[in-house]
Image (tube, rainbow, N blue to C red; front, side, top):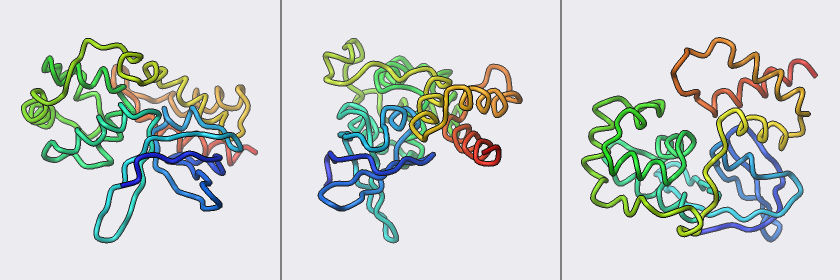
Length: 202
């Protein structure tokens, strides 16, 4: 298993990054929150998890080891694959996910696109006894602070792709104008739409 990669960020996209390690560019699938921390041309270290399928090898990257461990634990629940686990971590940081599962906070879990009430109940039943402590701070867990609010995630991710703060802000205003009130945004989808919009206006 590839537990981590350390190298120079060669490229950033809406769904991942390319990290150059020893002359080899590794494609790493990352959440918007993780992508927001990366900058092209700068060194980075990502905790990683390699997901092997019959027709593919996908390397998922995370800001820290705690996020990776949560990603892998989530997939032990029936019906949770790597994409859904990554989406869960895009909506909630690891500590909040552990709290929601341990306390049966279904309202928080169903904020994740792709998880309904029954799915949330199944995740809680299968994971609450294995989710670990929920009263530790990120520093005690060896991780980083909670992921920034979704708008900040989008702004930082777009800045990392070379767009100015004004360009990012204007694009975010456009793509979020019709968001249903009270529903959590799909940050990955908003990032893709922002990039498409900005690409047309340049």
